Image (cartoon, rainbow, N blue to C red; front, side, top):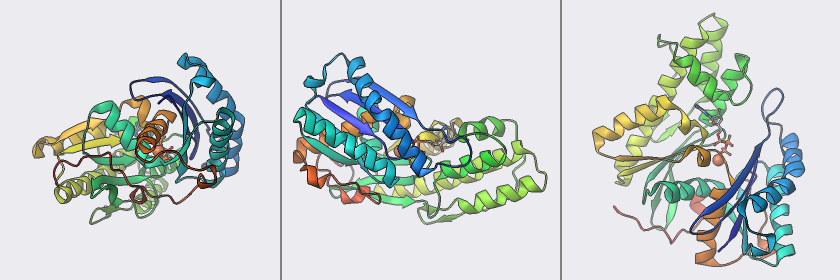
Length: 330
Ligand code: ATP
Ligand code: FE2
């Protein structure tokens, strides 16, 4: 089923042409705020200005023509409503123009399904760590369930905020990673784990105070990574025990961090658990992940009516039935 996958939940406008066999093209553009955090209205304007060209370029680069496309999938939520609306309207316009089915999908579902497709993981516990999201997800009784999550801000958001205070532009995660390599003193930051949930805003506030007191940016970066990544490892390990799964899938922009990957590998080696890393180009938000989730959804449930393609800013992965996943260990 040749599919146009369209992503636009936050700051990335991305389109991909793919089917069950191959990903033929993927074109992404990312809005970068000049200063401060993401401004929802500016982000929506960015999607508006880019979405048509991104779709056209993805079609052109795929080698197919517009009329070859058989289905359009788009990110229905969760995300920023102004961005979601532009994406949904673009997807509806394509479906109506080409007289093809349309499927709105859950954004985190896209992360896990592109990860399974590209790595061969079958029934993993996914650690999804991005700007806005920090979740531990695994399949149980016909749906993906959120085993643990952040109780306040996403870990990427915390890294971006502290990096911004140090004067670095978005995205800040790679800058913190770079500076942490030159840090060595473990400073006092709140380790905040509750069962399988974490919170990160206390780390941000404490790190900001340490910077004000004159602690070095390298040591602060080092400490933030050591503390917050240890929290992720602890909660991930608990989710592995609870779910009985023996695979880990890493997804989301923060999963590109080498120190995080090293800490997870060490834990997984001890437990004889396989770690699958979503390839870097599919780690960040992209149209291929949305297309893949749409293909699976369409093959199981068929098309959605245009009137059922409203956005859902609070759409949770555990609202989605996923009969295509065969669970291994339960
Ligand atoms: P969401 O998936 O929640 O919609 P998003 O679009 O912000 O959010 P991604 O595109 O998956 O998420 O990831 C962006 C985040 O990843 C940013 O917060 C960025 O700082 C972080 N990031 C990217 N590379 C690294 C790295 N090497 N180390 C730590 N964080 C990183
Ligand atoms: Fe994402």
